[in-house]
Image 1: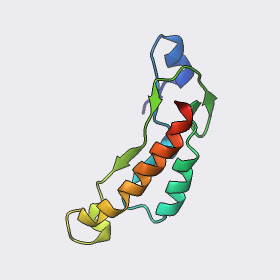
Image 2 (image 1 turned 45 degrees about the horizontal axis):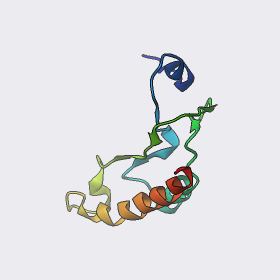
Image 3 (image 1 turned 90 degrees about the vertical axis):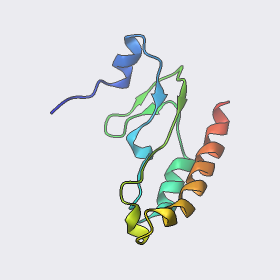
Image 4 (image 1 turned 90 degrees about the horizontal axis):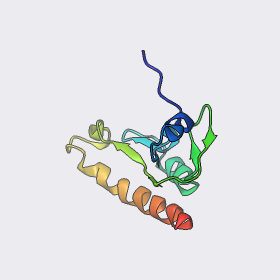
Length: 101
């Protein structure tokens, strides 16, 4: 196994951080897209981590992570049907992120 370095440790080492907290990870076989959209709409740029949250100031930015490795969940179309679910999530993230400009 391995242990990930805490964001505060990385910051202390001089790294500039982009928030990619695991609560904003989206697996494309997600059963509840509205729940994910709600989570993303409450994006907190300075809150890192879920199990042991840390508040970090002076962050470069944030991102959501999408894994389309199970696109067949929505039919045998090589993931094309999945495309209808992603634009609303991306738009929601964009709206949520505006408060940090």
